[in-house]
Length: 318
Image 1 (tube, rainbow, N blue to C red):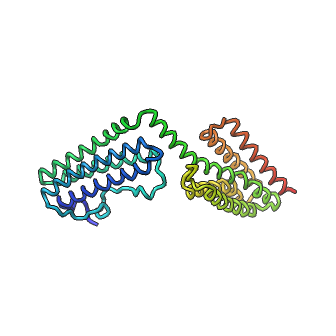
Image 2: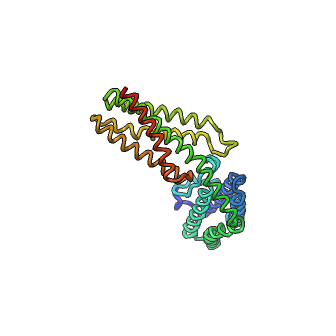
Image 3: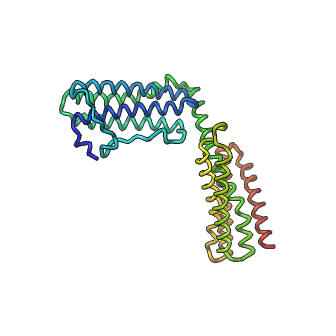
């Protein structure tokens, strides 16, 4: 790799041409990913791609005038410290906020590149064009706001934001909440049954760890295989499965760790406190994201946890 400071004016222009081509392609890729769910925002990115194409045309004309027809292939990854861009096609379906932030960061980085390149250029016409493009990228950021106003009236923007919120709920909150509830509640019975039957904290820890990890694997596979997301819009099954599995394991392992304490009574006390905290977190998430009243959410979660806890104690003591 070479440092940006080592590039000649010809190489800087070639790099700028490739940069504009790639940015335009990224905008079109984003537009295509958003077209079905967010048509207004997709149109914004199509128009931004057209503006990047105009920048590319200006660079090509100047390059042809100064250096001829052949443009060397100089890629971003060949230059140390040069701006990088994500591979949009490799991402899960992007959220509306993610792509808006992506566009803003791309314009800021490209503007900085053109300012640095203009500062190093000795040729007046090259320096002028690079400076003009830096100004254009700064204006492009404002143009993005104008395009958003043209293509995203308040009602459309509100609808897209609501859709994005719903997607986040379906893909992350619901699977994560289901896993956390299952891990926190279902593992109570085997852990406390083992503690009361063996009077050995470490035995209870082994049972709890096995139950938490096993439940995480089971719930993860069950969630991933239950729905591929094509009809329900619930997103990538692997992501949902991973979220569910991890949260299930975390929900179970939280009140398992206290049983590493050698003293059974202290371990039980700490475990009960952790369970109360877990159930409070679940109640808060249900109130925050599921539109459930705080009292109702607390009573429902507490009732389920109490029943499973009592079952474990009854079986262990018996």
